[in-house]
Image (cartoon, rainbow, N blue to C red):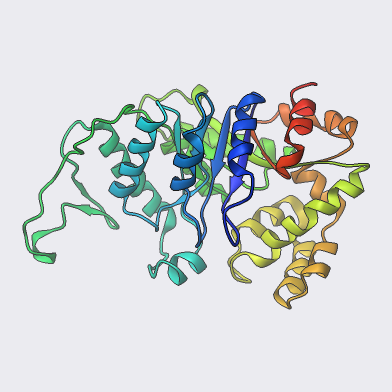
Length: 345
């Protein structure tokens, strides 16, 4: 199981020490570093800036939102970063949710799975560069039909030759159908709130997706890149205290009351009643009570917390899962200590 580090998206400004953290992650033997985006910083620019100081660590978006760019614009950014990094870029994509897509991008949010399928198909056409890009879908049509514009559009090939036609594409997915879609059309899956308790169910969904593949990509090369908070402390309870606000935000503060995909994952883990309480406090503006309502068992299900010995004892359960890369989330100042524990000292 490889290690990655998530830099996430920015809050009010650039995270202090991010460049040093990326350099340290590479020095410590991490396989990859990842950025994301919501409705502030974008996912690509920080990777180009920070990645320019690295030589071996892979650089991935987890995730770039498909509503933020057209498929061709996304492919342009991906092939550019792949060239600049010497073939180290991983394109992680996600549909986001209706609150962001409709509120920030001003686009409707119907049939996200079908839209994702079309998006990936167009990106792969660009990267393959076998012919001018042409696609006639429900969401994306290239070139634009002549009766909808000036009638001057024509199918085009990218002027730049992509470094890799098989540049890896990973999909963020939380619902069962979306997980299967990732296995069917992508090279990797970016889950949220992965838990060893759900491993058998996830493996079955991935198998369904592999069975539906229409190409010759080998499922053995499929990656599961899971962000997992890792906090070392004097005890499990003390370390869990640092994770509770994060879980409360995603379970109670993300999305709308009836459309929170992150919360749905925790519901399937058996925490529906707990999430009701967390969400009620969060939506009422009481973040402290929302965090306090997160039980330590929930934290232990989705994170690695406790003393170094506690975390070592938890590791075998995670190593036995479908996860291929465990992406560390947490205080960058503790990265050397966390790496020592996860890598076996």
